[in-house]
Length: 142
Image (cartoon, rainbow, N blue to C red; front, side, top):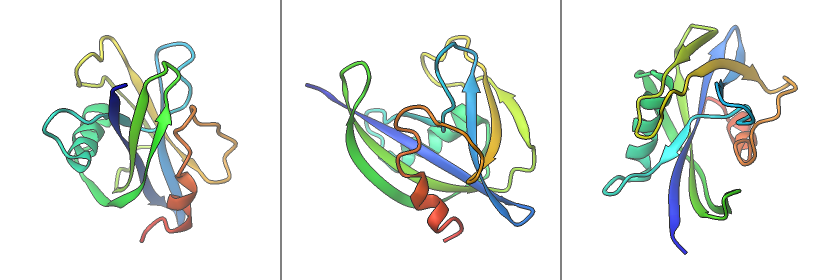
């Protein structure tokens, strides 16, 4: 069975003394609340992939990578096996919300609506997206 590599980005910012995490919803039914992510392409490292995917999916270009916080293997709902890399990135983005049409391959007519959440918000992320969020919240600026 082929293993697909995926790069996930927990993008955080400090806002009015609180740590916020960037999430989005897309214009397709049932996709849920997600964090930015994408496929590691041939010839790319996971770090290169996360940087490319964050720009393609969010439109943000001024991100600072804090580091790799976890990697694992997980079965996707399609039955495929994903090797997942979770990175923590910092942003100085001031907009509370925005929309972006992702620019990667096979994105079609997708439109993402981004917004920031905080630890105590009652938000349920799509399956697998929140698996390592606790590590970011434990040391958000380190």
